[in-house]
Image (cartoon, rainbow, N blue to C red; front, side, top):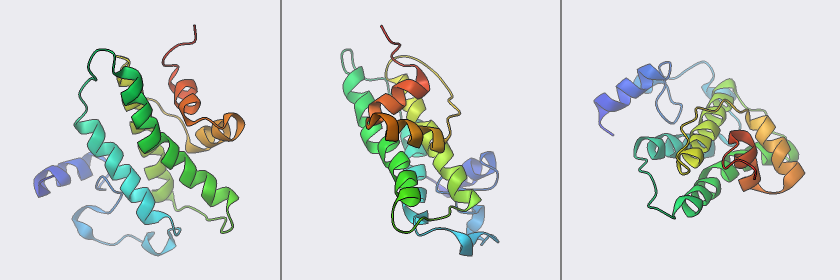
Length: 154
């Protein structure tokens, strides 16, 4: 991404780049209060945003495979970092920036998942809800399906 495109994207996201860093590289008051997961969260958010920008519809018959790849590459890791932080040994507290990035990343991945099936949605699911569904179902694909209603139950 060019510096100009990154700046435009940062302005559209409240002054932050795709990975949640302040535009222009300046430090924020919250920088010292991030959890030990901040770099992983930034990477997940940046990957989701980049994938959303370059999305192309899957070829005929390829919707399930592509949708599953978005679950594996995005929905599962985003939800997993949240679950790990809250059930693992460190019981990490996320900063507001980290929570915002997790929220945006989850919803970007969910949007991509739905678009594989020709459904254009802009979900607003919380990572906590996704984590609760994952803990109940043990199935990241079911998390995506329940949060997008795509594909609809038959």
